[in-house]
Length: 188
Image (tube, rainbow, N blue to C red):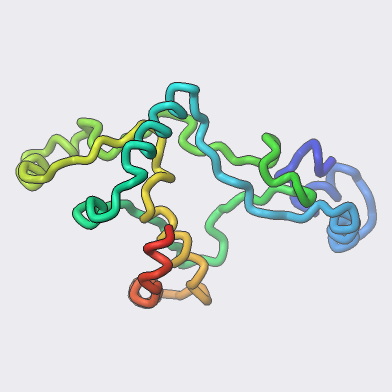
């Protein structure tokens, strides 16, 4: 059942099978079968055209060195006060990480891009602020090409405990940001 329904928890498997064994026993049997609960690889559904445009964009900038010094990446991320942020786990064996049933699609529906003519982007104040900014063309469905995405992952891994207040959370995120070695940033 765990292979057919990768996101089923031990408790859900126990209930579906109708067994009287404990939830821990179900977990132990899954582990014996090398089915560990892991975060799924988030993937973006890409067409051949998306892949081609991404490749061309990367190849066109592969030899940039000093040019990157004048590029600013912007993004947002989410950090939670509670212990559970609703993340899904999938059960998989070693070597199954990239199996289609172990992936978690993201951006499967149209979502606003950075400059998609949505209200915030066409507001007079936004247009005025961006008047003197040269925008780098960006291939569709390519948020992972931005190094800042990976910086947020580094920060998330460094947060030690779940803070109880927004000021404490803000302070922890700021401290984690400040302590990322510049060499780590250069190697993203």
